[in-house]
Structures are given as C-alpha cells and as structure tokens.
Image: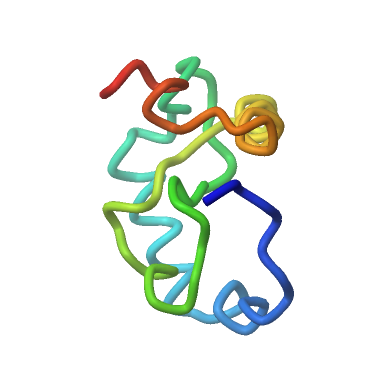
Length: 89
C-alpha cells in the first residue's frame, strides 16, 4: 500500500494519555536518540501507516528527529519502504 498521510480520524488517539505514555516510553527506550541519524529524537513515527488497529502497537513505532521524520514521509510518498530506508534493520 502506498503511504499517504493519515486522516484526522486518529486525532483522538494522538491526544490520549495512552499515546503520550507510549510515545514517552519509545523515546526513553531509545535513549532519546533518532534511530536513523543518532541526533535527539523528538517525534515518534509509525513505521507502517497508522490505523486504529495498529496505532498503539509498540513494534510499529520508532523515535526520530524532526529532520529524519520529514525525510521518511517524503520517501514513503515516493514508494520507498522503511526496510529500504533503515537498511533492513
């Protein structure tokens, strides 16, 4: 499936305490570092397109800095997968 920005139907998930706690746990687990460049991570990215079914799935989340997060979304729109970006890790 070609990536596209998720719609606002997930907005209530993003504002939930469950998401805030999970987001903090992801960043803490990664020592606050971007998993691509090693800079300070400030965002949590859904590797596979966020859906109501996988929104809170820890295995689908990775902490990224703002610059890498923007690059990832640009790559996804071009059809490039996380596996190619992340070198299969």
